[in-house]
Every structure is written in structure tokens, then in C-alpha cells.
Length: 524
Image 1 (cartoon, rainbow, N blue to C red):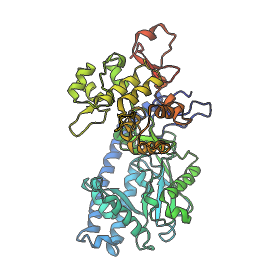
Image 2: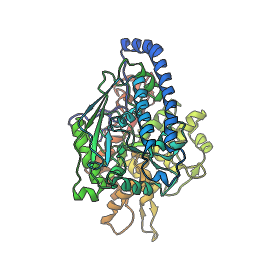
Image 3: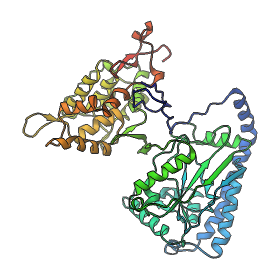
């Protein structure tokens, strides 16, 4: 089986083969001693001046952005702005924006290819999206319209720039917002050049540039031609990547501003003309454009995406967290000196027992408030802030090395299966099935519901028997391999079972059946 670490892909396939690509949501910046000295010197001298001047220019943008929309009603803003407002304000914002990035160290923007007109390609799609510096692509695209969260309107200066841009705004709190955005994108994209181009980052979040994330279909719903735009940062040291796990905003900003010069390459690929099938199927259209862009970049096109705040990938019809959250729970418990096998779960099969955070701490014998909060937050809470203790019992059993996979799946079934109305046996219904896969694999519930429905197609019931559930989790050609490898801890947590110390410490180590055994290294 391939060895894993927190920065690697989850080892889904135990069969020999080429090493898997790196996790696109993780960015580790390794600096040599000489590089650290250089960044200390330049960070103390160059970065403060650059950042200060860049913020001054950012605030100078506000008057131009305000002037373009000043005095215009909401109805007038539903049409593209023309006349002196566009001539003066557009040129001012474009020039100051270039100065802003120049001051941050982006001395050159190298452009390759030819940008298509609005009539040729009403929509631009840019990738890979890897950093908050990516809006620099707006400059060679002549400030196209963008899609942004409505909440950003309240951010100083940024809100004014979004109004200036006549951005398409989507609200997380308005259920009808997504439908309105789709209609607005379609209206502008089919205006036959009346509106400027609309720019999308179809990945929807930042990665480390080593693989393309799954494209969201929003840019492709209108079914019009799109022009792919590639963004590269061909610098010897990657200081710009801002991934889910890696350097934070301030560190990325500081290190990039400390570079003497940062380069950006923007490449316009040929316009992609959708087929009739792609025009009517936005997901197919998005997947095909993703493959074209990945091929041009020389990196993999993946099914990885964010669901909520968790990065997931696709295995068959199931979405699976790239890294088991169970490992994070295990780290918290081990840090507190707790061995999962020593906890008396006391969960009653088939019946939920909701417990509060205080009861949770008492049951697990945890006293540190931070440890309690970190462990408790792993479980899904109801409206009153309580969790089902069956969830806790299953997670502890998965972290404990006392059960093999057959016993673990049997316990999972017993905890969440329900009695049939006729009293003829117990079945695992959609909710229980989803809870098990969410706890063990990090799978979002919509994907588990789809898979559960497919598994139940061959029966006349709405649930799975123990035999059917274990056939799925232990013997299925695809999902059986997933269960047998996914719960293994990362390589950095493994210890040599032959070492004398292994039996007396408390860190999980893998057994031959894919479960974990409890031991703890000296340096934990």
C-alpha cells in the first residue's frame, strides 16, 4: 500500500502503481538557511515599504471607483456604464491597479496568446486559482466583470471596487441568490457584446497549482463560448500559493513583497466552442474545459473540491474527504493522554442518546477546555449543541485497535440500524448509512444518500441488511479497498511494531486488516 502523510493524497488504492499526485490543498514552503537570511533582510527593508505604498494606492482607487457609480440608481446599474464615467474612471482604476501590483513586486506581466472579443467569447475562465494575487489577471483582460460574494460589499474599498465593476453578487444567506446569479450571467453572456466579458475562477477556491480542482458549472450555464486563461507564477520560490493548509495571508503577502521581483505569465488559449451536448449540460462542459486547461498546464485534472469547509475527492459515486478527519480527532485525544480503547462507550444500539459538551468531557474523562472543544467539534451537533453518543462510540472504536474491519462494520451497523416496522429484522436506512460514512470517511451526506439509494435498488426495502452493508464495506471491488486503506494513519504516525517501546505508548499503528493499534512514540 502506498504510504501517506498529511501532505499526501489519501491512499485509496493499495495496488502497486505510480505515486499519487500531491494534495492540491496543501502548500509547504521550505526555505534554506540562505533563503531565510535573505527574507529576513529584505522583509525588514523592502516589504514594509512595498506593503505601505500598496495600501496607499489601494485607498486611492476608492475615489475613481466611487465616481463611476455616484448618482446612478439601481435600475441604471443594471445596464453597462458608458460615456465619460467609463472613460475616466476605467482608465484610472486600470492604471492604479497596475501600480498596486507593481509596488507589491509584480514588475512584469507576460502575456501570451490573444484575448478574444466579447462577441467571440463572452466568458473568460481563469485557472489555476492559487492566491489572492490572482486578480492581477484582470489587468490584461481589461477589467472584465467578476462574480463575488455579496458580503464583500461591506469591506472598505473592496466594496467600492465591486460596485465600480458592476460585479455579479451571490449571497450565501439568500436561497434564491444562486438562481438570480445564473439568470444574470446568462443575460450578460448572451447580450451580443453589449456587456463586457465576465471572468470566472471556476475552481471556486485556491489550490497549490499542482492540480486543477473540479470546475463548478456556473461559468458554463449560459452555454456560450468561453476563453480559457492560464495563470502561472514562474518564480524560483513559490511564495504566492495560499492553500487550505499552508502559510496564511500575512505570511504570503510578506514573503511575496520581500522578493526582489515576482513574475506572472497570463496565457490566453483558443476560444472553446461548446458542442450541442455541452451547451445543454454545464457539468459536461465544465469537465471538458478543465481537461483542456489541465493539459495545457501539464498538471492533472481532478475531482477534488470543497464541500463546506472540507476538501473532498470522488471515489465511484461517493465523495470522500482527502484526509480522514478521524486522524485529527485521534491526535487531540492522544495529546490529552487518552486511549480510545479505555473509554466505556455505553452507546445503545439503534437508539440515539444526545449528550452535551459537559457530558462528553465527563464520559471521556477530559478536563482541558481546549481539548474538549477540539474533540467535541468533530461531531455533528444538533440545534441545542448536543451530539449523538453513538457517533462518539463509533469514532472511538475506529481509533481503537481492538477490532478488525469486520467487527468495526458490524458495530457500526448495530449502532445505527433500525428495527423494521414489521419486526422482522434490522435495516440500515439512509440517515444511519450517511452518519457512518460521514464519521469514518468524511463523506458529505448528499453523496452518501445517492450511494445508499443505488445499493438498495436490488432489494424491495429502503434499507441495507448487515450482510449487504458488509458486502459493500468489505468486499466491494472499489469501496472495499477504500475502507481497508483509508482509516490507516499517516506514515508519520506509524511506529515499528518490533521496537520495544511500541507496546508501552499510545499512538495508532496499522494492523494487517486496515484498522489501527494503540501505541505512543517517545516524542509525542
